[in-house]
Length: 243
Image (spheres, rainbow, N blue to C red):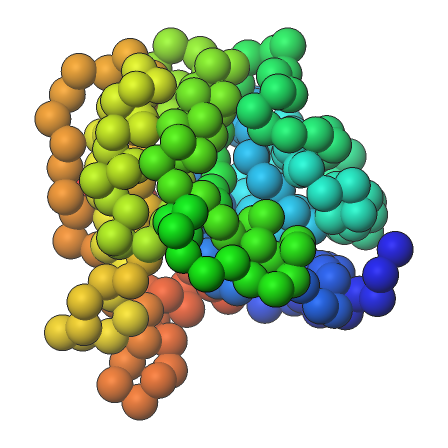
């Protein structure tokens, strides 16, 4: 395995090792995990789990979950398993494989992902692992939405985090997967600044209207995290999409 760095998430509650180079986690998987409305006793599935940041945070926040990750990079999958062991999360497992072809036999209550989100026409990263994680387009989003919706129970929830510019593609992809968008939550970098990221949730087989939520402001004018963002990123608070 390539060199890794050792750190933590959720203010030290989660031990987290990740590759020293290539694709490294930002705040996106922590925010995404906070937005998954899972309850104890349920099963959750993550696509593109990487080194496991999303599942680690979710299973730490909500006790009694069973979590399964799918990761195409064998080295990342191995690292995610090691991170699960380091945090004594025996209910977390990681499957190595392509999300387009690896279909879990069991059913899940929630699925979530930070899918590849740069348009295929964009300039790819020179780092192969980062390019794989980030490069995608309309067809890729549809593949991910379909693959993650298939093992969901009726009215199971699919949650994505992606750039705001990808919202039209995401709506179309979730519609095609029969998991229409229920809620969109903008993530504002600062007050008065356009959202760069959004959290989007679909409900399998739902027919309700789509709701545009007030959103979350991430930073104060001086660059510090807002109290609401800090509660999520450091204290493990939930990010509700039901208000």
